[in-house]
Image (cartoon, rainbow, N blue to C red; front, side, top):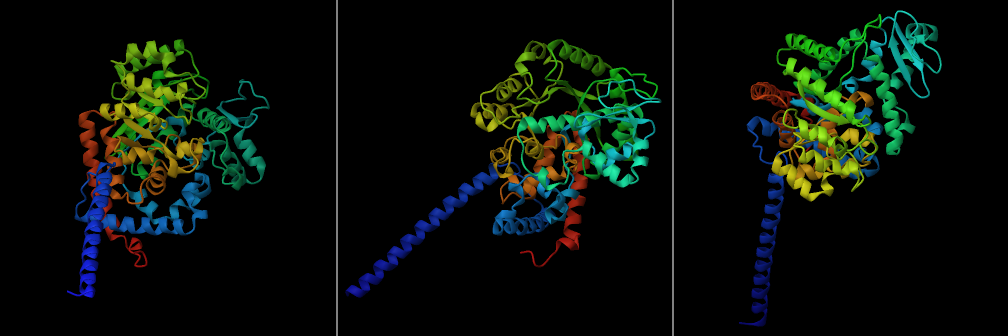
Length: 511
């Protein structure tokens, strides 16, 4: 055998060996990626034939929109503030699909910050509404005559100011700015520090709270909230709500229980008009800034109301800026005493700090047996706590846009939700206070999470699992969950068929 032949044989052997090595490597690589996909939220979902077709349509548009961002990274929306691209979201085909998708339930939202600012402005057309202009915000009050409450300027009828403006449309546009952090101006897109944004947030909350404390307006507000959320394909809501007395035009105040009764009555009326809506439960809240005695009053009120209206009360939570508010350990004696009779849905870890009391609220939420943890933003820094959350099956109520607006994260690609999804944690998506930044009830959060946080490969299985999680981890009893699953499955099948048949989604230029 000559040298040339030997050389050819050796080259062939080397090529075969290299090919085997490459094939083995590719198999191992594929196996690792498949293992990650299977472990992630939604990874165990199996799509049927129609779902597969709908998923192919969804993913073609997702790839097109993300590839546009990769090719022009200076315009990559999700690395910027939510306010900078908010007005463009509805142009996205992916968003249009998500918008019509049934989303199950919303489990983390605050009752007075749920409605879009445009709809709040319409409520200011009610008679007898007075306004007091404060330093940076407003205080509203309904009265037959000038309110006797203190005001640093002077009380004026909103209707008189609107009529005197000469331009009611411009007046309303300016008035709306008191109800939302989203101003629509370029200078609002910059991130500000946490303390400053929370101050602005409280100003907005104070304005909306003063508007909705009037009983007739609260009734209209509640019904409009349910309409807006229903249009966003939400079939069940758990609202966080403080207990206080609504008032009448003559100044008469109702007892705190009346507020719960009002929500029950409005919800029942809405269900009559929309039979596939499942209902509302309330998570009663107490401010972290108030002392233990006031907290005990809240707890006793929950006990009393729950005894009379058991179907309306889900449990208890503490709210407010965690970095500056009292930690859960401050309320520990009271919480330890009540944990066997009241369910806890506790805000914890809504902070960027490590080792602070706000961060360590995660420890106490877990030890106190919280059914769900609100935000849980700091959890990735605590591997032992993350293991406990998985072992105890404690759902994390994640609110991505809220975390951006309130300055916890700048680029959502760095949001810990990415890790929670990859690790298969029990996650539910919610929106926290969408009215305060004029967002859709939950569709915007689903869109930002799907496009900006989750893997490029995350598909319809993730979206479906997130919706199913919202039902699984809700405070509904078994019968209610069964009913909600039935409604969801029926609406899901309709949604899938609609995506397949929508000719506007069949753009042949998308590959």
